[in-house]
Amino acid sequence: MPLWFARGLRRGVVTTRYPARPDVSAASLPTPPAFRPGALTRDLAGRLIVTCPSQALRMRGEGQAGGGTLVFDAGACTACGRCAEVAPEAVTASGEFELAATTRGALVKEIPLAGETR
Amino acid sequence: MNPPDVTATQEAATKLREQIAAQFGRSLHIRTLDTGSCAVCEQEIRLLSAPHYDLHRLGFFFTPAPRHADLLLVTGPMVRAFEVAARKTYQAMPGPKVVVATGACALGGVYQQDPFVYGQVSDVLPVDVWIPGCPPSPLALLHGLSVAVGRLAAKVQDLTFIAEPGGGA
Image (cartoon, rainbow over all chains, first blue to last red; front, top):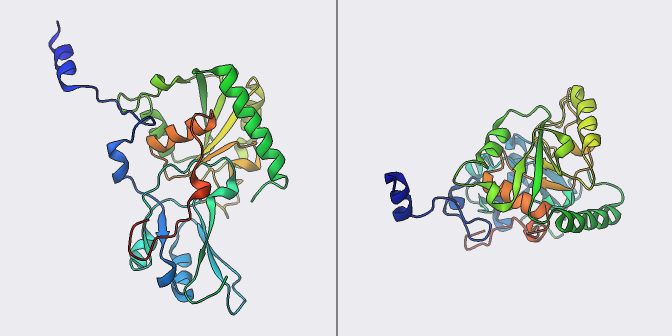
């Protein structure tokens, strides 16, 4: 029996079992941000929108006094992490990588802002 | 950004996925189409055939010709000069066929204001499944392909991207 074959049998299979079982490398993938609405003020949201290099963030209801929301397009997000660098208190990594969608609209999310009613 | 008749499109997509699952069973041939991507998406797609991911165990295969393909894996922001080639590729595929937009530029993220590109694949081709990421990791691609053939359900519509105050996603 060739040596490499015996070694392979002893060490087991290196191929991932995904999607039947979770993959160990999934935890280290860069993932889109998750927002903390309590810490997300309107000023901070504005800074995040300017920071985002791929136009994944925009404001809805900007002219109104209350009820503004931050619109996050997970499809446009490149998971670069710049928003989390600008505001670590309001933005963390979501840890989600299984983001395939069957409608484009399913990727667009509304994030409420701090101190504003929807 | 959304197509005007969302429910009809959704119904047609569901029907198509059922048809794909019934007709192709566990064998599906993929044609990749680069519409001006930076080639990192291609690098991740190529990793799918590496031993660790080994997409052939799931019955997915790459084919060099659109006439043999069931699924079109489109990357890049759809350069305007590429429109004719993209349409011809789509027309050359036998039905039923699925189009998967792959990566942030294909989904309309990075090159929204660039005059040389359409900015998103769905401006030219009827997209059935969207896979975000820059680039989407091979695991994300495997998930997207499984969603496209109906083996897994998409779950992003239930995510909020709102972190709890105590931490965690």
